[in-house]
Image 1 (cartoon, rainbow, N blue to C red):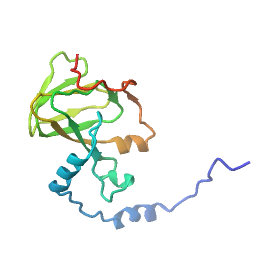
Image 2: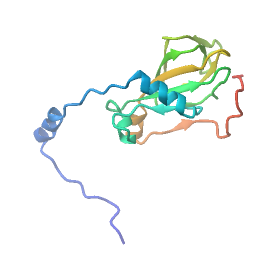
Image 3: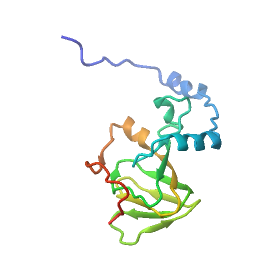
Length: 168
């Protein structure tokens, strides 16, 4: 029978603390031209198009401790279905305009280029894009942090999206 429990070890605290002092993160830049090329070449899924990565690997998507940045495109006239999850989002509207539907609030929030929208954890949210241009959203989130805590809980629709329906 294989061992299923790893025996922990002890590590001297000051040495542990000095380990962090030695870590010098590198600056990372993403060229707008590369993002535009990626947008043109990518499939735009309901929950996101791509995630920024420091090195092109999944682990590099945690660009700051516990944080990732995703790019989401809602096509002109399309909408996303309401969902909620254990991580927050800070959305920045890169371009386009539309409406955000948040929680049980009967008043939708209008969004336009350069607007910011904070969606706390477990707040139902959905987007409806205006009919003329795609809504391009940059979204900072703490999904890596929640994953590290073993919390990827979400309340998401289980059926496939049916196209460009409108939010009820």
